[in-house]
Length: 162
Image (cartoon, rainbow, N blue to C red; front, side):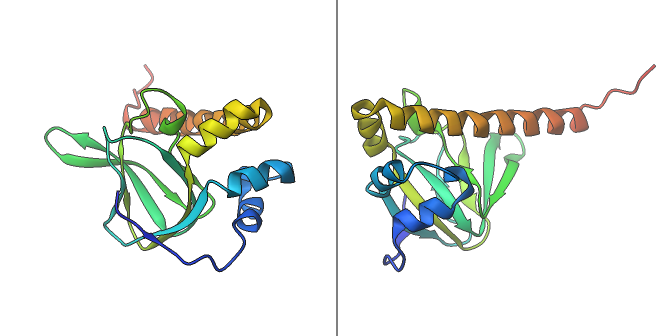
């Protein structure tokens, strides 16, 4: 992954606390997470992550758009979802073998906060309350994405009623 790190203009803890994913998270957890965070930028067309590569971070998208893509054997990449400001990108850092299952490409210039998965796994082992809070929040993301996928499949494979 190639990205440009922005110079920190704001306190990362403050930025994290304002992101919907961390809404009402205990400030002591925010301080721990901020130690694993960095501002990043991706240019339009740049890959944020690639299928099969090591997954060691997740992203809080602040501005811009990122397309989640799967490789279609005959038609090339297929966009399965587009994420924008306020969304979360990536949960493969949570589950061994820590490999991305899809590609993500910036559709337009994108600003995000990258959180280091190795750092977060270590902090979660040291303080299980942090890990539990992260798992609860990621579980909601997984559920929402599965529901969106189900609706998308119903739309694509709509079978006429007899």
